[in-house]
Every structure is written in C-alpha cells, then in structure tokens.
Figure 1 (spheres, helix red, strand yellow):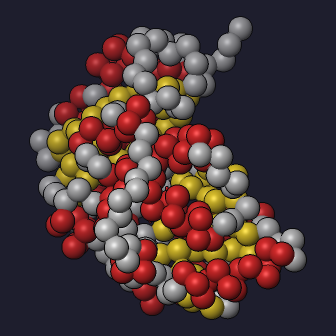
Figure 2: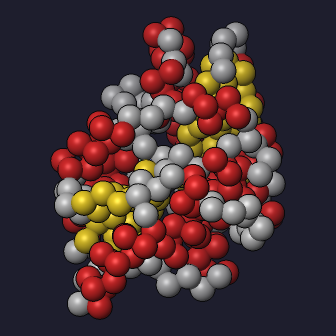
Length: 285
Ligand code: AMP
C-alpha cells in the first residue's frame, strides 16, 4: 500500500494526475473489519485495474440501531495489513466529520427497491448506503467499483442508482466468499458464540436446498419455501426475519420461477443478524 488518506482533498489530488494519465481506477468501498470476502473484492480490482483504492468508513447514516453502530467491529491496523497484502494502492479512511461536515439534506433513495428483503426490517438503511456510496463514487471517481453479491439488495440498488443517475462508473459484482461449511463470510460472524457459529450454517444450507429444488424443476415458490423453511424454523435459537424468492433486478417477490431469481434470507442468532442469498436461473427451452 502506498498511502492512506483521511481527507477528501488529499485523495482527490493524488488521484487526479493518474486519471489524467489514463490510468484505470478500481474502487472497493468497505466498513473495515476486513476478511477474505473483502480480500476477494480487492484482489479482483487489483487484477483488473491500474490503481486500486479501498475505503474504510463505518457509515453512521446506514445504521438504524445505535447499538449496531457502536458494536460494529473496528480493526484498522489489521485492515491496513490486509490491504497491503492485497496490493491496494490507496486507502481512504475518512472520519464521519469529513464525510458529513454538516447535516446531510440531500439523499439518494430507491423506495421501490428498498421495500423488500432487508429494507423492511431496517428502515432508512439503504438510503444511507446509497447516499454514502454516491458520495464515495463522486470522491474517488473510479472506472470500476466492486461490490459483493453477498449484499444482493445493496448491489441491486447501487446498480440501479448508477443507471438512473448516469454515474460514470461500471459496477462489478463479486461472488460471495464462504467458509468451508458454507457460511458466508461477514464481519458480524466474529460476534457469534461457538454454538451460534455452528447453527449459523443452517442459513446457507436452506438457501442451497431451495436452489437444488428449483434446479430439479420445482417452479412453485410456495412449495420450495414450505419444504426448506423448517430447516431454519425448527432451530429454536434462530429467528427468521425473512426467507424470500425475488426477481434479482427488481427485487419483486415471485410466485413461479420462470426467470433469474434470488433466494434470500435473514436470520437472527441472539442479537446478531446474518444475511445470505443464492441466485438461480432456470434453463429455458
Ligand atoms: P462491508 O464492509 O460489510 O460493507 O462490505 C464491503 C463489501 O464487501 C460489500 O460490497 C460486500 O458485499 C462485500 N462483502 C462482504 N462480505 C462478503 C463475502 N463474504 N463475499 C464477497 N463479498 C463480500
């Protein structure tokens, strides 16, 4: 890693000549507590672009629960080491005061994409995400920006925001990185007790089972959900927030699987919320 910047102007001054010289810029926004999922995004950016910028910013405007913001893991020294190892050129670590020097009066919202899945249980979350991503994209002005498929609703909203607002950037989706037992990597996994960690695999197992049923030709969402939801609801320590089948782009619920869909779930183990999803495209013809 060449340099870390906490000021917007410092980062912009460093990137401007590179952009003028025709270098491509790859950008990976994160909230830190980096793990192998983030590393996959950074390595993908490293392989595809000349200059790699990562941001580490725990964005206060996307937290609907103050506790979640307070307890969100922070590990800056380890994060810097991981960025160095992944070949990142510049790390942007702004403070909240740098990103929000005065009350934010302008917001990016996509209500039709927010009123599903995680948006239902986390009011205002995606408005905070879309707004901070728009701000970061305007600060970094990357050629490509990399987002994990793990956060499928976030990815759908950002892809649509870039189209609707004509932002000059290409969004690159990166497949979900999982533990060997299927659990999607997440900064929140660190807060699970050993027993919860074992039970957590039920989420990915239920999603894989749903996808397997669809792959065997089952097209009824009701039948798929009734078959696999007990894999979660039968475990007393798990509270299911949602288990849904939606169109991957519009996030509208589907009843019959006739085009590409997203199987997506959110569960609570104690006070830890975990999300995951898998996609499925039926063979046509
Ligand atoms: P976060 O720091 O949780 O905001 O995540 C930053 C980026 O890393 C987002 O684009 C996430 O979708 C992505 N990400 C988080 N976990 C994973 C994972 N297990 N596999 C792939 N990408 C991930």
